Image (cartoon, rainbow, N blue to C red; front, side, top):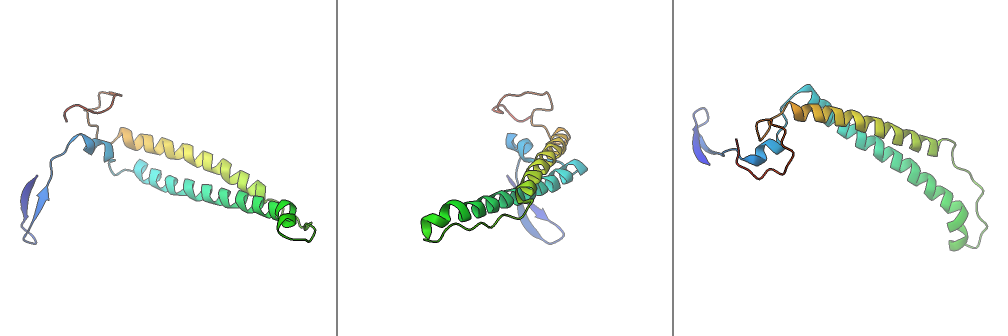
Length: 132
């Protein structure tokens, strides 16, 4: 690293050399990177909604069938779950899979257009060599 003086605000800061790890962590700003970030967040959001639907449905079903008789003397409740809870969970699982595929495509495009540590020769091994 070297110390550099910023002339505008008159302070010193450190500038570090790039090494092999720089290429593995850097995605250039582009539309693909922005879409990858958005789709990543949407994918997790859909996953959480699906998990909540399925878990809530399972707990509700277990409460008025199995657990009700274990924890109390009263007979089990015959309430039914609102129609579509498990269907909504399944739909959000399907949407998660679709959004995940689009995320992978956008992320792959962003990686192809970003900095490559070995000059883009397509080496698939673990990066243990010198920085080029």
